Image (cartoon, rainbow, N blue to C red):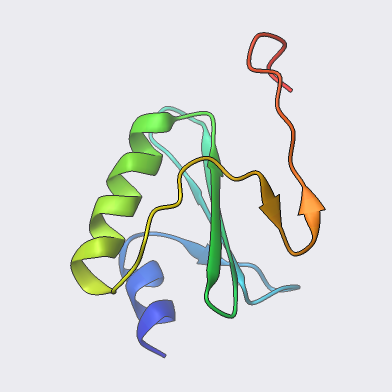
Length: 86
C-alpha cells in the first residue's frame, strides 16, 4: 500500500491494534498522530509546525484537500478550548 509505505518512510509507526493509526514521537518529545478512515484523515499534535510539514509532504505525494481545523469526523463533533488546552 502506497500510503503505508509513505508513512513508514517518514518515521511513523503503524499502530498494532488499529492499522489506520500512525504515530511518531518528534525530536521535541511531542507526538504526532495521523488517523485514516477511507478517504478522511485527521492529524493531531501540539506541534503545529510538524502538522504543517506533514501536510506539505503528503500533498507532494497524494491528491488531497486541506479542510482546516476539524469540526466533525465520523459523525462526532470536535470542540476545542485553546486557552485551556482542551
